[in-house]
Structure formats: C-alpha cells, structure tokens
Image (tube, rainbow, N blue to C red; front, side):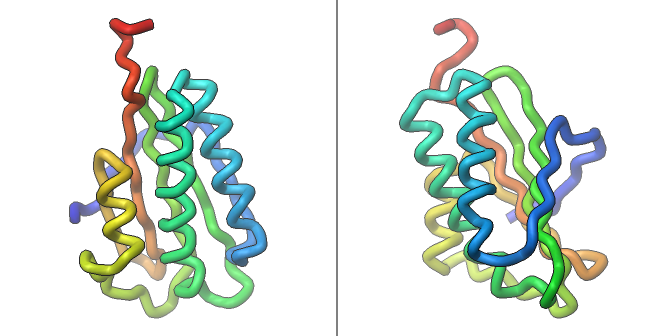
Length: 134
C-alpha cells in the first residue's frame, strides 16, 4: 500500500451520493472512459469489478449524507481513478480482506489515504493493448 500523491487536475470528476444505489453509476462511467481509451473488453470488465469493490469498501465508511467523489486521470492506454468519501473515523485498510485482494489482482497500482477526514483509494490501470499494438 502506498500513499496518494496526485497534483494534476482530473479530466473527469463525478460526485454522487455515498449510497450503494449509485454504485452502478461509478462502474458505468469507469467503463465508458476505459472504452474511450481503447481498453479491451476484458480490461474494462476487470476495471468495473475493481471499482465496484473499491466503492463497496468505502461506502459503509462514509459519513451519513456525504458524497462519493471519483476523479479520473486519463492518459493514452491508462487511467488513474481516485475514489473518496468524507469519513469522520477513517478505517485501517485490511490488506487480507476480500475487497483488497480483488483490487490487488485487478489493478496495476493501488494506494490508500485517510487524511483530512477523507478516505481515498487510488487505482491505476493500463490497457493490455500497448500503443505499439494500435
């Protein structure tokens, strides 16, 4: 696990209520952006699963009435997603938990931050299709 250090502005930012009923919006937005970057269908499905697990891990920790924020940083054939919630009592992430194991197996790089009453997970992924293949 590493700390989050991202200073540039996100190309896309999505803010929704921190409620499981909206988790599909995060997965669908992620899939649409990945398709725009020419990710393969398998890459897109893996990313949808990873982001779904990250959201499921975070939503129970969110303060009532708060928002879940997703920031998408797009590059050719890769994407970094920061998901965060307002959280008065940020949890310790268990690297042996099911959600963390899924994230670890599906994402290239994962980082967690629990600063300033925010619980943030950053997931970086690259398409299995390289620029040389396109």
